[in-house]
Image (cartoon, rainbow, N blue to C red; front, side, top):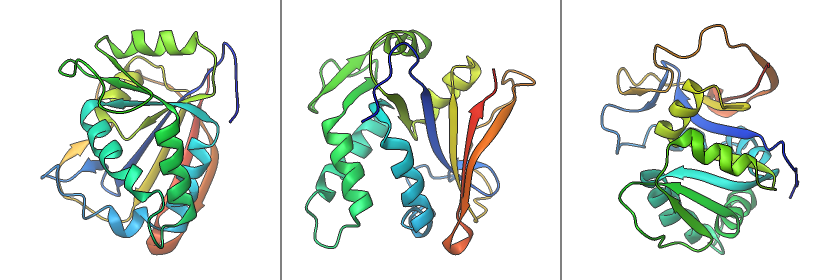
Length: 200
């Protein structure tokens, strides 16, 4: 894993529908994601994000979802090697979970933190390590975008309209922030991956 000192990047990753939603009207309905999440472009996109990362930062709800599912992929018959690689990384990496309701972590190598997101990021950036990867935790990503603390913004865009639901980009974000496109890929079913770096 890549180790950096004093300059850790904050990398956020989110899947969006073509009409800009990260969740359907029923937030528990993730069926719209599945045909696209298992494409080569989506799997390669995630691999390129976790390989230089040493810390996963998650909100509680996403932590429960990710850490409830991904460890089961390790050793699963027929599992894609990229999925298994991510699962192993998630289990073995440092995990920081933002929560005001959990007192202790039910997962190994996990720290529960009840502090504002910007303070958590400031603490992590002062420590040694690789990228800090925020995995699909919308509330965390929104707070980081609002505070202009995202260094790399990674998106997968799935070619489906949800027609409603929650949006990642709310009004009120810092105006005139500019971003540089550092990678792009298109694949099966029109799945698109985009990675932008913040221009500072």
